[in-house]
Structures are given as C-alpha cells and as structure tokens.
Length: 74
View 1 (cartoon, rainbow, N blue to C red):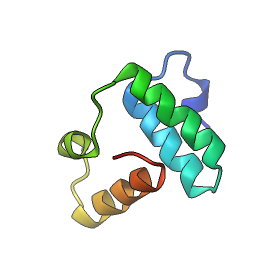
View 2 (cartoon, rainbow, N blue to C red):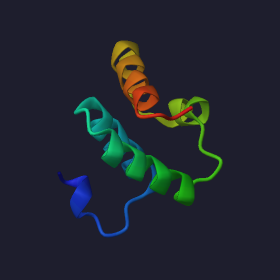
View 3 (cartoon, rainbow, N blue to C red):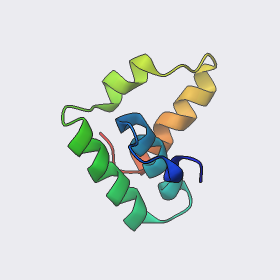
View 4 (cartoon, helix red, strand yellow):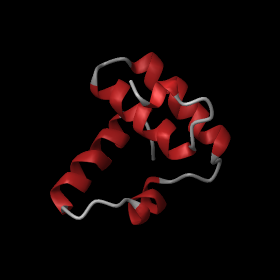
C-alpha cells in the first residue's frame, strides 16, 4: 500500500509492486507494474537485480526472486 502512494516510483518499486500483486493473485495489476518497470528500466533482468538486492539471508532472497519470477520477470 505504501508504494502505491509514491508519485514517481522507481523501477525497483514497480518490481516490488508487481511481485506483491502476483503473490495476491492479481495478474492484471502485476502485469501493469511489470510493464512500468520495463518502461523505466528497459534492460532489467532478474540476474542483474539479484546482485543488488540487500537481502542477507539467502533463503529470503530466493523466496523474493521466486515471487518476481511468478510476476513474469525474466
């Protein structure tokens, strides 16, 4: 809910929103946020994004990456 209030979301916020909506089963909203991410960051890849994520716990990071994959990111 907090990210939806941001007037100019960053690409990573769009990724988090897409992942959240996908996890809740709202594929339409997930797709909207995924498309916005690619507008902001056309060269986005999960591999590159994975390298900058601040997660210290590998299990948590893997779970989040799986959520991004479920949101349609590659």
